Structures are given as structure tokens and as C-alpha cells.
Amino acid sequence: MTTTLSRLDDARIIDLNRIPSPRGNLTFIEGSVHVPFPIERVYYLYDVPGGESRGGHAHKSIQQFIIAASGSFDVVLRDGQYSRTFSLNRSYYGLLVPTMLWRELVDFSSGSVCLVLASAHYDESDYIRDWREYVAAVSAPSAGTIA
Image (cartoon, rainbow, N blue to C red; front, side, top):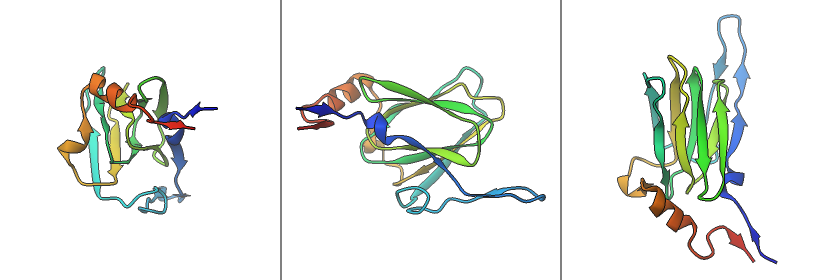
């Protein structure tokens, strides 16, 4: 019997530690502890106009951890066959996005900030920016299949 696994099964929300205080709460993230990779790059998206989307690509080898540091937005993940939407709206949890998932960030609230922790430095050759190229890559024989 052959079972097809979806890469979407590897994407998940991870709750982060919260240290509450009357002076304000604190959350921290340590690479290889709270996320399953060393953090090599951090970037953030902000001032995204309403109705705009970001992303629209997949990474061949880079893993990411996406956090709504402020406000809210949705992350739509696709594996070439299925899709799943994650709503991020709390700064104390984030979405682990493994390699080879197509991602789009949509429905940004006013003033939202999207914080992304990545497993590697920026490398344009790691991106797949064409949907048809992505589908061909994940549809290749033995991609995600266990015998």
C-alpha cells in the first residue's frame, strides 16, 4: 500500500513562552530550542496596504517561523494539491513553515507587523517564484510518497 503524505502536515503553530508582568509581557525565541532550526536571518514586513498580499513563493531548503508581532494576517500554505490557512493574531505563537510549501500572506490588519525567522541567509536561488514550476517540482515521482 502507498500512502501520500502532505507537506502541509509538517506545518504547525508553535506556542512560545510568555512571561506576564504588570509592566508588560515578554516572549522570547531561541533557535534550535523553540524553533527546530538555528536562526540565520530575521526580517519583518510592515505598512502592508489593505488588500495586498505578500509571499507567493516556496523555498527549496529554507525553513521559516512566521509571527504576527503586531496585528493579524493569514498565511495560506499550499503543497501543490491541498491548501491550509493559518490565522496569526497573537505575538506569543508562530507558524513553522517547512521547506517546499508555497506560501502567501494575506488579509493584513491595519498596523500589523509580520516577523519572519529563517534557517538560512537570503539566497535567491532557494526561491521558487513560479506556481507551475513549483507544482512540477512537488509532483515529481517519489515527492512525498512512502511505499
